Length: 323
Image (cartoon, rainbow, N blue to C red):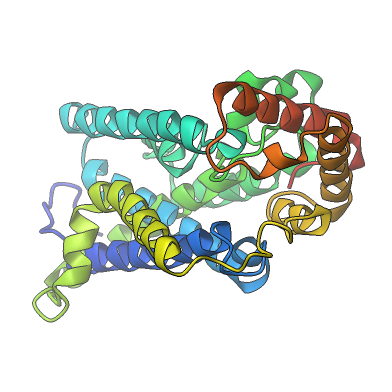
């Protein structure tokens, strides 16, 4: 059994895996941008194979968070380095919330993957010493909890981040603790098992970075890549729009069916049809259909869109429960 006192060199395979996950994330976000700007059929990036691709990327990225957490603190929690890293992640998550609130008010990110990583890092420390035989059923419990735990007080905004709420405000990037923390737990469990099986030293001895320099470099600077890649991609697509605009029918195709398709990325079809009908009916009744397509809405329109989305979510929540 491997001693807890053995200090491992950096495992390049982990950096490569993290870099690969980030590149895959960039590919998906580029597709999402093309979808958002009207170059793809509405809902393409959030349905079918692309939906599975996105969830696989997020799962692998969070799994690697668990791996890194155990590698960094499995031999003893280093509070200074942990607090420093956590502070940077919290600041980055806050910046994303602020920017998206003004850029995409009706889908702003209030608990995205960085918010999740910040909370999961703290929770991960609390379970770091649990044996694998406890971690595995714990992960299963986190996955299934949203299907069994229901209470009215959990529908308050203060608890949306848990994933146990039935009515949450729509968001372009939403990774609540339940069920997504299960991926972090599995990452911790897998790394702990690898340590017990004396597999970490052989993995550390594999040094492929010279042959694959780009992926490990991205993996070692994952936060910077994550924060920068989407603004770069959006800017590139925006510039392309100026030269080759999307089809003129792109806006018109965002109808109730397209709304339902996009909504179905997070909720079931019964809820989404009711929700989208509510949004369009209210907008039409108030003669504000054009505001649904506003790319740069003013503050009053942003507030109206937010209120409308929340109102329709609450009114139609009885149609289904969150996934």
